[in-house]
Length: 63
Image 1 (cartoon, rainbow, N blue to C red):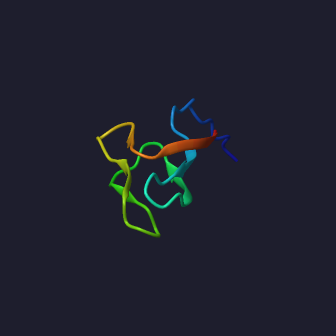
Image 2 (image 1 turned 90 degrees about the vertical axis):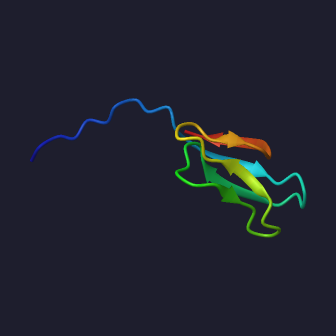
């Protein structure tokens, strides 16, 4: 069986707090589309074609 080796990636999951309703949700740091709050639909992370622009407050980062 072939061994699979992963490269170091600079992406991670983050817990982000919505500025409008204070809801916290986990999002990807490099989203392919805009991420909205599940409660109030406020934009949390704007897709930029690379690392997303976080519009909420980053609470925690998971690598």
